[in-house]
Length: 401
Image (tube, rainbow, N blue to C red):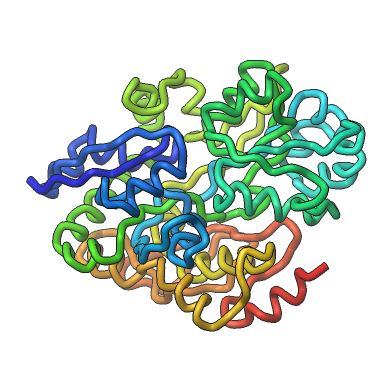
């Protein structure tokens, strides 16, 4: 058995890792999987960079930020497997949510609706609003910035973006330390259950196939351990198939509820797995079939175009200058070549391309693959924009104020 240590944060989208360890998928492929629970993304980043673990459950933008030298110590990282698409939300205090336009269900279905008077609602606080994100370089932060900017709100001037670990957000919202937050499940549901907040927007409605977490590792470890890495990815692929099966959701929720993982009630975790999301304290609920994707619709494939969209947002918000070298480095983090190598002989179909136009699909669409059939799901951005990875400069010009 080959030992592998992987750091993770207690979020619903650590599901594939937990299932791989607890249900024997890792053992089947000769992997003795040790999962190291942590409470902040900065600590997980440091564990990975300084070789305390072999791999990490990591924010996709953070992996790219480390590669580009934007987040503490620069290191060459590889991300050959996506652990989740979507799965997050924006939660406001009940007072702030009440000032938004539309009902809870209407806002959850249409993220544009809540932006129509978002600026006025924030101004009613009569101070600079404080909105928490899990990390500066997180999908949650980029999604929140994208949504705020659509409403004409400058996320660097008009609000304070504060970094908080996800498990601390409910208490911070309840005590008035923050006015809202963007995080993954089950922490939005925890705020709702505590009566501290209301979910006002769903990540899967802002970007219908938004990349969330990846399995990340140091590039040199990936290159030095190809057989071990391939076996690990095959185990994770099988675990992902199991996790995404509706018949397994209750068992998976109970697994994740354990002390070693999320430490919250299984019923709360199951909401994110099923897409039946309770929005507020009175029990208004929506059902969303793509709230969290763990395997369907090529959810595990590391699309280089998604890495480049993240890179484009870094440039948009002034984290770095646009350049061919930075673009190449960002794209290189997502190792579709390793994914293809590891799963070449498995049942999971592999896309025929490694880049695609993001935001162009309004319904499920079949694409070419090496075997069987492969369908990609809707991937629209809520504002209707389309990201062509071959025309980044033009895209950035369109986003300029």
